[in-house]
Figure (cartoon, rainbow, N blue to C red):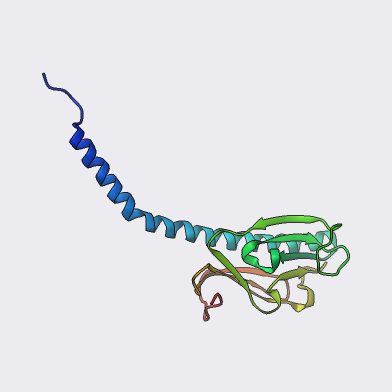
Length: 167
C-alpha cells in the first residue's frame, strides 16, 4: 500500500528553499516600500498644497501649509490664518494634519523652507515660490519635486532634476 504525502526530508528541503528565496527578495521588497513611501509623501504634500489654495479662495482668507517642528520630513499642517500673522495660533482652524514617513526626507528651498501660504486669490503670500524635494533620508538624490509658482500653481515632478537638493 502506497501513502500519499511528503516525507520529513522533502518538507525540510522545501522550507529551506523558501527561506533562501525570502532572504534574497527582502532587499528588493524594502526598496519597493521606500519608493512607495516617497511617492506617497510627495502626492500627499502636493494634495495638501492644492487644498490650501482652494480653501484660501473659497474662504477669502489666507491659508498656510506649515512644516511640523520646522521640518517638512516630520509632516505638515494646513490651517486658516484668521489673524494674518502667518503663524498658527490656538484659535485658528486646522484643516489637515499629516505626519511624515520614516526614511523619507522633505527639503524646501528658499522661502518655502518652513511654510507656504496662499491668499484669497490663490496666489502665494510674499511671492514665496520655491521647490520641495522628496528623497530618502540618507540620499542626496531627489525622486520627486513639488514646484510652487508665484501664481499658486502646484506641480509634482518626477524627472528632469539638475541638482541634488537633499544633500
